[in-house]
Image (cartoon, rainbow over all chains, first blue to last red; front, side):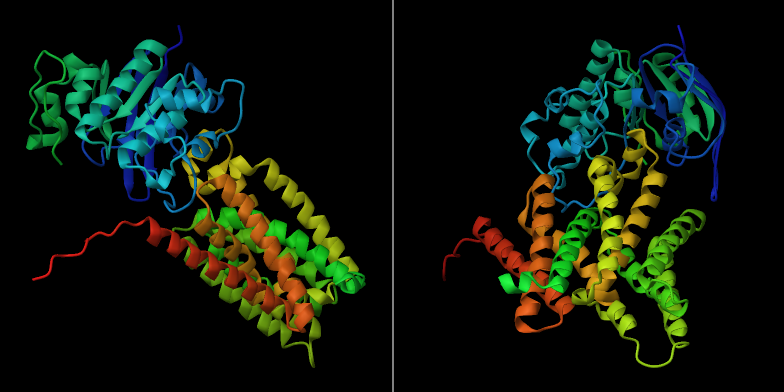
Amino acid sequence: MDPVLEVKNLTVRFTSGIALNRVSFTIEKQGIIAVIGPNGSGKTTLLKAILGLVPYQGEIRVFSLPVRQVLSQLGYVPQRFSFDASFPLTVEEFISLTCRSPERLPVGRVLETVGMTAFKGKLIGELSGGQLQRVLLAHALLHRPRILFLDEATSGIDIEGLSDFYSTIYRLNREHGVTILMVSHELSMVYKYADRILCLNRDLVSHGETRETLSREVLKKLYGEAVDFQAHSHAGSGADVHD
Amino acid sequence: MIEMLQLPFMQRALLTGLLLGLLLAALGIFVSLKRMSFYSDGMAHAALAGAAIGLLTRSDPLLAALVFGALLAVLIFFLERKSNLPIDSIIGIMFTSGMALGIVLISFRQGYQPELLSFLFGNILAIRGRDLALIAVVALPLLGFIYLQRRKLTLLALDREMAHMAGFNPDAYQLLLYVFLALALVLGLRVLGVVLVSAVLIIPVSTARLLCRSFKALARWTFLLSEVTVIGGLLLAYRFDLPASGVIVLLGTALFALAFAWNALRRRRQRSPAFPDEPKG
């Protein structure tokens, strides 16, 4: 079986300096993979490079193919979505704003998946941060992606919504086989839901099974003393990164 | 009215208004969503240099301005990509440089310049048959393309990364949008002039934004308001013997003011009092 994602010697340079330095890893099988690291460690850049949104050096293959050839099988929920909030665009219209294809799911179905059916006719500028993130997730799901990239997709979501959001992600992976690659600062959620983690600080610090990799030593290496993490054996425990 | 419609220059003016009303409305939606009003205004001013080149070389000034506008749009696109300068700075430089070039070039021609004045202030009633033909040849394919690619153009105007994820090249569509806008604005120069043409691009969609609660409704209202503004303004100008460009823009502004007042009243009715009558004493 082809590996889901192969990244070899990935380097990204901006005018301000190196964002990613010779990062290599392979994700062999589908699952939920979390990318963690301090601010400015290149997490967002990693996602953007994989998706072809920033220029890079190195090699990236998805299902053993160049990303361009499989772009339609990838979904992306960005960290920020800046738009003119006063522009009259309904949730349904926004989700429909993608090219028609035979694989496309009905808008109603993706809204149901993310629990936003009741908001179909609401203007996107009138949604709360959490509701908007759900709509962005619905938009990303429209083409039945095989891999979903989430870049701090839970920013702006309250504690109650956070658990719902991760449950949706978990269901997408376990019931529909969608691989999730998510950037997150919520270590408790990462510990609870992620099968594997990539620890990034411009270089790849560590990667592997979540429970084995998410140790106090690795976290101190990433965040210094700023993290207070208690990795209990039961799911849902632990603490998050305090910036 | 019937007599007026039988006049050949009026027929040409109405056809021109109909075409430009549609084209400027279609592009105005993306300009509003992508916040490109300054680009539109700047491009219209800079295109004066193209018209001046046409007049100096004794070629068709409208055609020369179209070519100049398209080249300028490509230049703005590449400067935006290759420099770290914000887009409004680049447009500001191009806007003033184009206008300055136009002024210098015009100074080489002596005497009264009626054709140049029509580019500065617009004169839809002076549209000739070949102007109308050129406008139709450029505007109809642009309208067809915009209609067929409306989803991609809207997605691009909304978010560049989403456009990329939808599987098309956002850079190519961005360049096309810049060039199309330049062409549409240059076509509008003969009707409304350098100073006023961007008003027809901006005012109808801004008015529609005050009235609508969906993108579909916004598109319909923008087209309707644009046509009412251009055709209505033209008829009013003819009836009262006033300059057409000024009347067209003023009619658009009046419709905007009405929509603004209606919107304010609607909001006031919807709003419940924040502080009910306070007890006295």
